Length: 472
Ligand SMILES: [Zn+2]
Image (tube, protein in one colour):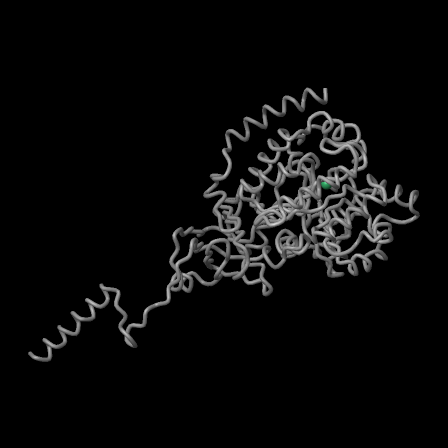
């Protein structure tokens, strides 16, 4: 009787302690539960970390802007409590996609002039249309439309070179996207600068304005070696060195460019850029299609990052970049869509698939640029190209929380034996359900939270009337 009373008393004491949240040493050690902002749980987590871990199922804990843990769901559940939990069952959770080359506002020219060679397309349509239509208002409208498309298709970081880049940067920051953005410097009068010298001054002001921005990395963006003289290319390099900024440039895109370079300088484009001291760290070379085997060691030595744009290169019949050779040489290679006028969208899933297909066809070898290589180029490879490899490009503790949830629930994705294969060979931009950048949810279950979608589309349709009138 006494014993049972004692037991009851002990039991009651324990209950009181538990309800009061008191600590009962030894027998009931308090679980160390950390409060975080977001937990994503239940999906197949494709980390793209150094071991290329895939957790099926897996979970991620995000606190503020940072990923704090990537593990099995039960481990995350035992260690963290979140303000918001996202159920990712039936989805793949992966690093946000990184578009290493585009001209965001050119979404306003998509479908305006197709089926032309690069120089015809540029000189007869794009440059004249730009001269008549590009303004701060045009750029804002186009950048909002592009941001809407990128968030909706899982792009979380993009590299951009255009005009009035400060407008693009503000839209990018407000939309919550990460951007490596540069003012275009070009030799002829452009919509925002009459001379390359003015372009450079604008570029420097832009760098100063966004130097310490959380989301924007300001870059220097000389258009190309065929639209700029040596002194402007060298000034661009010096400006980039002064601020340790990335240098975005088109290089060796077409055979025409190589011929021009050989006529003017008796050298191929990369060799010329090397000879004038332009090549070096932080160069993001878009296209790099016409590159000889003998030029690759110089690119490795200079640590040049390559932005591969398979769709633009195919559409303009520019040629096929030697990507398998770049990859085996150890160069950083990322993917880009290029401007939507030569693509005609900003869907990085399509860029992955076309990259995988193009090199198989070109080399006659179906084993080159496999699905893992395509995913790596669109994530960690792109991050390395843009100098952001320590911050983004993979899902691992300490990195910024740039994460997307991709649905695998539909008929098209069923069955799923290999998530990486599905990401490259089956998935499309609109399969992305949720997009998170820097720990902020930009799109939840297909609803974009940072832009007013109907207003952005209406504004773009209105602006398109001006574009149509200008090219008539
Ligand atoms: Zn381009």
